[in-house]
Length: 171
Image 1 (tube, rainbow, N blue to C red):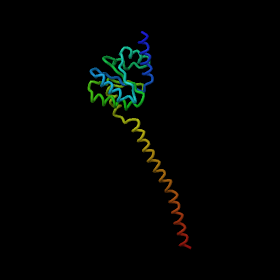
Image 2: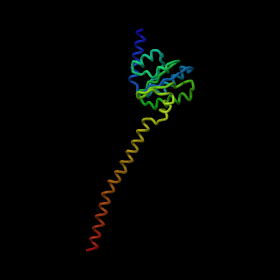
Image 3: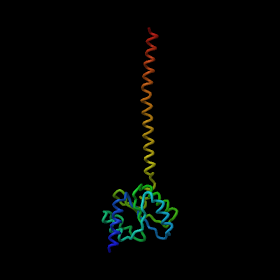
Image 4: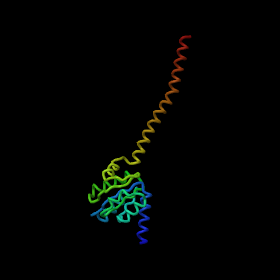
């Protein structure tokens, strides 16, 4: 009983500390394939095979009851501590190569996700790509502003020079 309580407490902490969770069914995958999957998403998530009953208890204690209906059959959860988009991409890519991995759903930003919504999440660009695009746009804007500010003094100098020449020719 104490072991079950410790497992529930650990799962509850994982639910509470995760940016998102993705629930999968791994029926038919080998231990080597599961290791390959874990390694592929390790940077952003912890992938754990879970007992459905204990997971339901832990999820409910963490305030997540939306996964209850999907907790049947052999289940494993990706507890996302990094970029949810990267994890969704990794799981989808692995599922394409290994059709026995089935994405059952997930939980992100206070809402349950259907398998289709997890795939839509995988279609988004990663955080790093979005940040680099924003940085590129900001750099372009700053370059334009710098060009404008640099042009103002030189334009002023040319205008003053033209006025001086005009005065010299008039005199």
